[in-house]
Image (cartoon, rainbow, N blue to C red; front, side, top):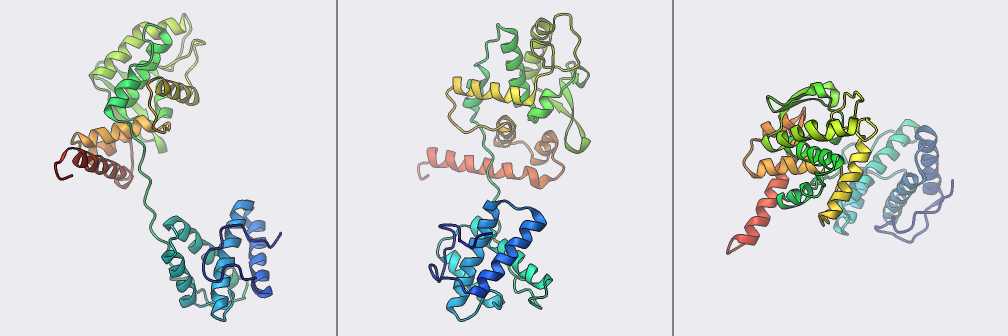
Length: 316
């Protein structure tokens, strides 16, 4: 294993100074150990090396060494990094590197204490999920050619996906006995084998009924199939194939926002909350076991409200 630092990663006090032979040896010994124990990638090892080298240079400037550094010196290094503009994610990674290094020293009997025991990483905000506007959704739904059985299938799938907030994997996994058109609901088995009933709404139920009456029989011919949404070969549509089609329809609808397989699911939740839905109802519809998972959508809704306020309020 080489001892060169990853370029551009060892910011902080003492940058540019050579590491002492003792610090260099300890860092390389640690990297060898974690590589053998966990098989970490070269990228991860380079990040560890850079983080520890930066800390070593900082404490060396105060006459200490990485192996002997105390809690105050490590806190000081973190403070220097934060004041220098280090982002929370970078600081969190640095804390993780230091913790792992000093736990290794303690385990190997090279230190009696762990100076990182009280080091806390900054809280990282959860990324806001991407959601389409209601106009974007309408444009997307209008793209499939419903005079063609495949287009009718895709329109039905998009309508059901947006109306129910299902995961794409749950949508393509629907079977004929999981759809109750009379009651307008679908029965879904989600993560952890949890079953839930989700209402479709009139529009989605109408498109699904049209597909089941016209498009699906045309695609199947005389072949039997359990899957609701099928290909021309009579097989169930895969998640990857449907996601590919969503991207094509989005391009045709001139939607430039970045998409993910969960985009319509996120849009479903966000639009419900924007129109006053209760958070616990959205939790049930999405199949989240923990309300905290659903709460991220309240941030999306608030973000949208701030945008509307800024756009329309005279003092926005």
